[in-house]
Image (cartoon, helix red, strand yellow):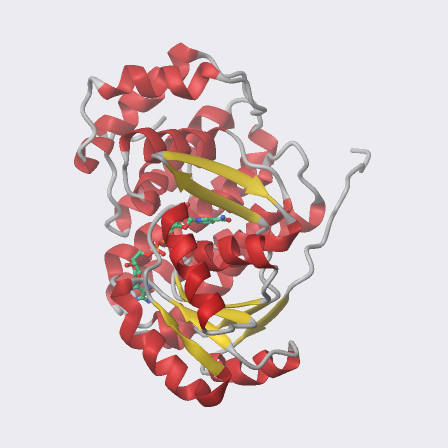
Length: 352
Ligand code: NAD
């Protein structure tokens, strides 16, 4: 094989280790800032308040209204608070929703961001931002939204509920799996993807059995960082497109949708790029799609779209939406094939 590729590193500082979220204050100062607006969802407002307390005079206050899919109205409210409090940076504490709010603020103000992730979504290391306005979600890529500093502290994930750990972990794995066959794939992203899949394969079953296992939590967060980095480095294809359609048009929950769809989308593409997906088969056993399904099933992941409240009648429209606009995928997107993939995912059938 003749090597030929482009690799673009995205400049962010990644600090990783148990307890290292305590370095947030030092990083605010290192960024030349003095007043951080701490961001969270309402569910994590208590943790955000505690973090603001630890930051002391480096905290400008807390905005705890972050919501799924970054609604523009919420961003505008947070923007007003950032102005009132004269914030000169943001610290986002939480999952992809909170990170999304920090990115949306950075897009509008260029405020530096420190992100302290508490799920495995991976948004903190990408320059991608999805925003919702009037019920429509649009996605953009912009260097301004890439967070400057990420503090990965596995201790903050010890309490991530098992069900969320499983779906969020599979959401992360989807970035790595699709990265392996990306049109702009490159050796560095592929190395990270394979390492990430191995890390999450070993960590998630331990977390299911023993949610507060510090070693496994560290390994899962390490895998999630690598998965996010792959997502930020190369383009995604069928899997992310289908999940975007399902979440955007049928309001299915983000991580669960990714978890259910992953074995099916990988099975669909495996016939076109068996060599590129061979590492998935090696790591999970069997054919890539079937191996992923067996793994998801073994850790108690949701397996059928039916369980997310999607009706069988919705599948035709989902197939239409997912095939309406052309996009790159390693295997040709045929409506019939996508419709039957959706049927399998709806029924929770093990892919061949
Ligand atoms: P989330 O951020 O919405 O979190 C789900 C819920 O879990 C929230 O209530 C949150 O407060 C809570 N939570 C988070 N961490 C917790 C913890 N450790 N313990 C207890 N509760 C906790 O969900 P998510 O799956 O992390 O993120 C999904 C969003 O992120 C979607 O909007 C998705 O589009 C976006 N996303 C964006 C990118 C990107 O690169 N732009 C990448 C991945 C995901």
